Image (cartoon, rainbow, N blue to C red; front, top):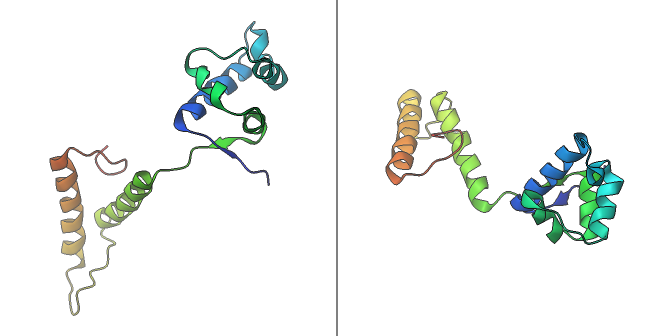
Length: 133
C-alpha cells in the first residue's frame, strides 16, 4: 500500500482544487492531466488563488500527493473533540456504564452526562461536531 503525504489544511485545499481542475480541465492546458500540472510546478510558475498554497509543497511531496493522495493530520484538539463526541453519542443512546457500585441508574447517568456536556459547551460557546454543531 502506498503511503499518503501529510499536508496542512491550506495545502490540502489547494490540492483539492488542483485535482478538481484535472478532473474538469475545460480548455486549460495546465490542468490537462497530472503530468502537465507537475511540469507547471517544476517550471516554478506558481499557482493562483486557493491553489497558491500548493507552491509551498516540496516537488517530491507534490508528485506523491497527486498520485498517492494526501491526508491532513488531526490536531490534539480535534482528537479530543472526537472522543468527547463519541462518549456524548453513547450517553444519548443510553449506553454509558454507570460505574457506581450497586447502582441501577444507568439511564439517569447517561442522560445527565449528555445534558451536562451540551450545557457546558453551549454556555462556553464551544461548537463540537457531533454534539452541538
